[in-house]
Image 1: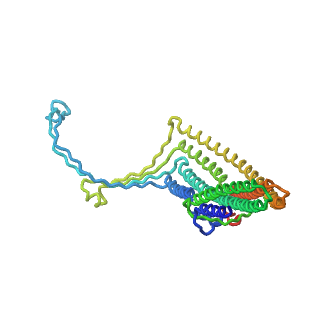
Image 2 (image 1 turned 90 degrees about the horizontal axis):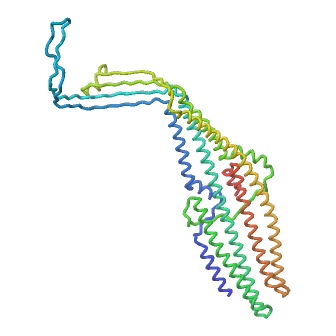
Length: 459
């Protein structure tokens, strides 16, 4: 049975090696890979670049519009007949003399005319009720928003890496816990078998030990699959193939705790990129309100047009003192009524502004509540970890004593198994508490807006 169990454990270990061995990656290295390859982050960078281009485009409202045109054509018409008024004489009986007209059928000769033109026009906006400068301001506001969004998405990706990285750490640590449970069960089976052969225990104790070993092996095998899933998740967040080789540095460090919460609130309100995005959204809506009011003002523009034309194309591009014309002028227009469209648009933009202000205030409160909850959770986890460490030591001693009592015949196998389960549970609880504490620490750093700066020191 011992040899069979050893072979089975080797098979389980081999099955769990779905990933080729590779150099272990630290948290910093995983974050660096994700920042380079994460699909969401790449598309967000492209959106931010597009917003920068929109700023340049927004200057079109104040820059002159210059157009050049050139055309060349030939107009032909065939011979045509038509009824027209034709002079046929003069009536000298009246003063003044009157031309006599008679309607006759006339024939028009074929027509063939060349047409050649070249021209330049310039149109300049002088005043449009503030539309152009508010459009520039809005584009710059959207650019600032997109950059804050890029920071927010970057922080979220880093947070996702933290969570996946430490989840993999947790699953691997739990795999070690279950591996120890298998080894303990195997050791207990070996001892029970020897005691049975010596007549110290009944055959039923051997069967119970085999069942316990089988149950622990099942947990170990299931945990191997969870490790593989956790590796796939981290690989995907980093923008890599799910089955790509991945090992991480099995280390975790925790801060002692968070005491001065008021400073954290202030830091979150100043640095959290998502809150800054809501504030920037308020600014964008203020500019939209100003833009919506521009149609209520008159519009003033200037224009210049220069044109050259002649039947002979050579004269269009030569003889520059001839065959030309130009015009210069100002235009003033004002919308008097367009079916309440402008008025409704103003009201809608003002409502959007109010909504954005309400959203900003709500998110300020929500952010403070989140920081409060995260810090309370983290401090509780640190207390839980301390208690679990003490519980683990007690569980180890309980297991040792239960084994000793069973060996000398004063205890039962059920007591040994119960002590073993308690020990495994204590190991599981400690691993889980450290995982949740470390993830909560990352959530606090995400809320404070400094998760990028704290990547190295937090690992």
